[in-house]
Length: 212
Image (cartoon, rainbow, N blue to C red; front, top):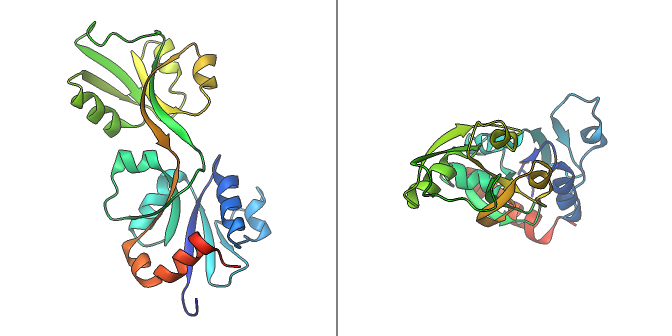
């Protein structure tokens, strides 16, 4: 561990507490300022002098890893499916944020032969277009970043492609889960090739054995 510094990118938001717990179980404790909403800094010390944690938007973690600003980070498998795994190392799969990727509509069953072109609302443009291309179904992608369930209700799209956990949000918006595209979405730990090459033993110890 001597002379090796490690920067870990932690996602802000709903996965944050589970990522902190994951790290804590491996002997890494983050300074208290990390947990205070009034604190505006984004780089935090830990109980291990050589390790710092930075707090980022989930969508930015991949870029920080590829550009070498962070050594390892936590991202959803959906991010990998959407953007590919080029230029990153897939280090470990976790059970954090386990969910599935599904197509949902206001119909109990979608008849894919009733129209020539379907409108799909999603934030996963590449996943959607590749999936329907493989099925020879023509679609127009409506790129949205939030409240995707409203797209069908207000006539923006014929159906949506989105992450589903319990299904409650779909049910609350009178939508049916029609097709499960991928039933094994969860959080992955990724790293840069550069960091993994130089700090492999350090990273493996943290992720597998822990630092205790």
